[in-house]
Every structure is written in structure tokens, then in C-alpha cells.
Length: 196
Image (cartoon, rainbow, N blue to C red; front, side, top):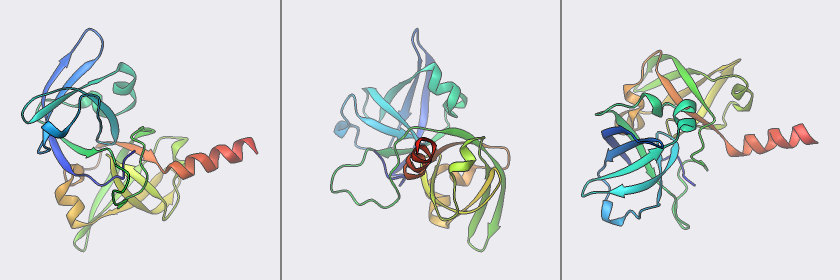
């Protein structure tokens, strides 16, 4: 489990196709000695398992299914990646509960400066948009955000200057694809309504 509070922006240092999957090596400012093989780390909102590590990098392997359902299939050497280590009992829950299971890929429709912040409008794929509610939570590229408004398949979020500067969100523009994870509570409420 994660909180959607990004703790490092890593960089893709290598991409390799293996006989099973695609392998990514990620440079990080984390103390890699403290990361166990088998540890879960959120990469742009996608929970991946550490399979190897070096002095300032670790490797993950990504299945074809994950590549086809997330933005990870577009990653190239040098790309920045939002990272978050798994939450531990007793950690501050500064964002919201995020599972690291991407629900779909959205498209940034617009990025508009608003005071010191930036307003993003994002189109969510159907039927994902029906789980997104004003003042609810959503993870965009692994970042916990509050939904400002929803109009059909498009929702708006406000990116404060700090988040703009310390995550990859400041690099997004109209047309950018983003990983989306809906609020886990919305998922369970919708399932309950379907079966009630």
C-alpha cells in the first residue's frame, strides 16, 4: 500500500526486453542498501517488485499486461519516474490509500496556470470516469490529488507549486498520457451498488 506522496523522482537508466518481460533499471536517491530484493515500490502509480539492485539503482521487470494497460510501455532511457516506497505501519498517511494498481490511462486535456498553481483537466477512459467524484481522491502518475470538478469523462485537479516542482507532473502538457488509480473506497461502493 502507498499514500500517493512521492518521495523521489528517479530516472530510467536502462530498458531491456527479456525473454519473459521488459526490464527497467531505475536510478534513485533512495538508500538502495535499505531496499530488499522483493520490495514493492510505486513507479508512476504502478506497484512493481525490485528484482536486482546496485549502488544507486534497482531493477524491476514488467509483464506485457502491465505494459499494455499503463504508461510504462512508453518509458525510455532518461525518462523521469515518480517513486514511492511502500507505506509502513505507523507512517503518516499524508495522501490517501493507494494500492499501486493502475485502473486506466487518462489523457491530459489542458494545463492552465492559476495563481501559483496549475489546473489540469484530464479525460478518464470509460467506464472509469463514473468512479471519480468532486472532492474525492485520485492518483495521477502515483500522486495523490483531490478532484475539483467532474464533467462527463473529464475531471479537474489543481497542482500546487510544491507538487509541480518535486514530481513529474510539472513536465506534463496537453496530450500527455497518465496512469490513473481511482479511490479504493469508490471502487468498493460501486461494487456494492452493483450487487445490492
